[in-house]
Length: 343
Ligand SMILES: Nc1nc2c(ncn2[C@@H]2O[C@H](COP(=O)(O)OP(=O)(O)OP(=O)(O)O)[C@@H](O)[C@H]2O)c(=O)[nH]1
Ligand SMILES: [Mg+2]
Image (tube, rainbow, N blue to C red):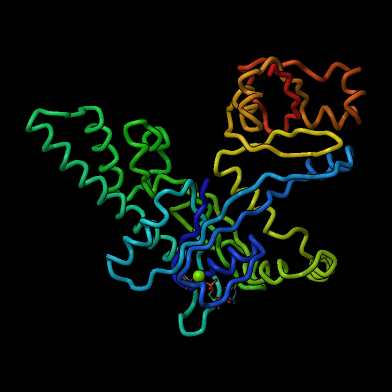
């Protein structure tokens, strides 16, 4: 799973990456790709840990990818930039909404549009090349796929109309099209990088509904991310900040990737396991070990809320809220599972 930062130069991509990953890089790293593995904050894991007092607590993780800056505004440099992130599962699009001396007042709506156009243009190039090929195959009457041709024409029409593909997951996830990894088809979280004293969301009239948007004071988040917990708490109180944006962005990232967590609990470890939404119990078991998947018998399952309501696993058993689920059970976010299996 790869979640990449995109956005215009000086929008604050590196600052946000560092705030999320709590890393620091020097200017010499500007041209290098950076990867940040980040724990997904989860109050449920905190509470389960308080209940079990385990030796080890393990959170789910998200991987962030910050592409090294490719200099130049020519077509070649642009194509290189997009090639670096084509295999991403989703994007975080950072947009400058603070004054940058020498760069004038922020223009968030225009900047948003600029990148949207680049995504669409890159996809158009791919589509046109493919259509040419399909039309040549059709003429020659060999290896021609009429269905792909039809789908590709639908995609081309949308892009010509300046419509990003992300509103049509049925098209972009189609087995014949998935491999093209269309940029405008990827989920995107738009982060408006606001000045320290500004909390309002800029107007994106005409573009709402296309993406998820958040207004974040990225510089402030960066500063807070450098502090130890008690300094950070004091700072937040002083500035009347209820919660940092960091948690929300990371949680949103996880969700945007189509991921959910189930938990395993015990005195040794309380742990979050990551699965795709709609995974079955037997698939979820495979996340832990292929032996558990192969020898799967049943999964003892209880929802997080039911466990909390009962106060302990023993009480939950008495109340009858611990269920036995089979292979095809669709695991729900927050399920606590204990697999029974044969070796
Ligand atoms: N005032 C203010 N400055 C910011 C904010 N966020 C970032 N900056 C500054 O803007 C400049 C650019 O930030 P970066 O994070 O390096 O931007 P970038 O998108 O990574 O830039 P490139 O790597 O050059 O594309 C830095 O000098 C930051 O300190 C903010 O919220 N407010
Ligand atoms: Mg940067």
